[in-house]
Length: 321
Ligand code: SF4
Image (cartoon, rainbow, N blue to C red):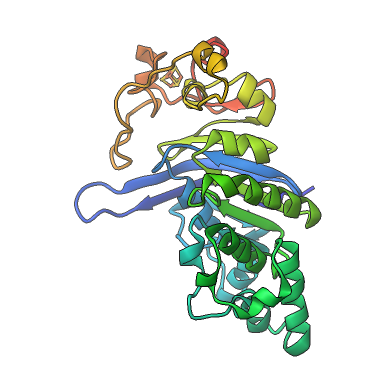
């Protein structure tokens, strides 16, 4: 079966005014199958949002290929790009900036259908009402404006608009990070329900490993423009193979104080290097507690270890968390 999303050797470099280009994404490959949710995790600035922007053509790749439902994004003409953007919808972090404050909620949700000539008049109003109901709001909310809603409700409105064109792929870029902790679980549960009821594939971009564990089937870990590890969820959380994944997991707080005390500490040295001057060899070697001389010289190959894909010379030796 063809994947809904195929990212193959994606490279995105941004030219800098002075000095070398910023290597935001440097050879990233993965696929997302029908009905699958893949988490893409990493610290801020690792390139994960650039990947999702490249998927819908918001940034131009420097190299590699992205296919959405079999359609190549690179070099796509306007018509194909329009089709790709209908098939792959993005839900961004901040619902306040995703919605036009002067547009009613009904107009915002119905806009994609109206612009593409898919519904108008009474049919449009009915489709908007159905979408509002699906995301847990009421049809009469269509006549209100975004400022009349809470942050969580606004994100529900953004999700309703993303669903309007029945996308095959939903790209969620930190969809709950800007929301109150009290409503995050509700929005995550809604996303899981909708992903299943609409049989969508989902790429879930987040810095938060606890959130990703809740919603994803597989998880890809990114650092400084590179994938470090990609594994089924349970394998990644119980048997992380990459020292960076292990460090990220060690930093996730445990609600139970006893478990928190028992957790191994995996201190990372220093700061993330500049993506304009990434380290030679393994890009993680300047911070890795397991680095050896070989790591500074040779880029680790992307290889299988059981059901996990990992890029580390010493992956077999990484201790369990
Ligand atoms: Fe650490 Fe070396 Fe593995 Fe890179 S290749 S993660 S530096 S042990």
